[in-house]
Length: 256
Image (cartoon, rainbow, N blue to C red; front, side, top):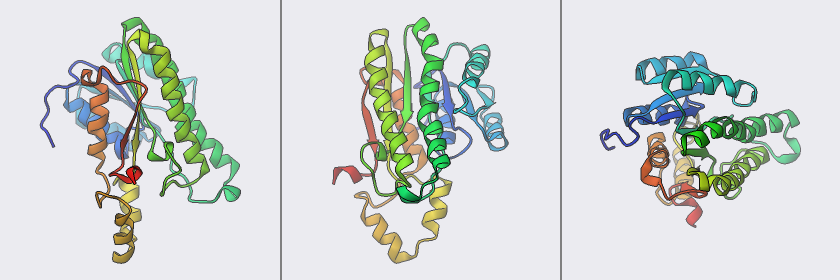
């Protein structure tokens, strides 16, 4: 991958779900490219050491994105440490049980909607006043290719529901805040080799793995850093004319 070139020098970026998976690589890359990064997650045990490793340009805050009241405190801490927030990356999500709709527990459905969907809404509400005052900003909502269609690999109806909703709220907010120079876009990854995916794929035998990869035109899963480079682009001024759009990164699956 490319060496650091300061593509987001001086920007303050808040990344949720930053203790594992893609959230880690988002935070690391953004910091490497010059951003000051506020990392939040309920998993303090894994998240805090990552922030320490990044150094003085990272702050970890334990945070449940589904707790609306906690958002104000998170933003306040970030602003006190680094200054006004320029970019929000709504990345936090919960894993879903692979189960049919009539078997899905209501509590699981509500929890996924609360974290994946409502958490993104709460995050936008929390940072928008500061972005309005500053005269601009960028919001990057991590959805899924399941936010475009109920894709292969989507665990259940709750997941698809939440990811479609994130796509919709992205468009609504993009139109509302375009006159204020606040851009809002969604990212729609396909299969990504996070830790959970590696464990799952690791259980496949050669024939099943080959059949699975046949469904992906590029014949592989994405590395998390590949999604992070897309997030970096949307966080940077390079994407200044992009708003209200879906950025699909799925190895060609939805092109079929």
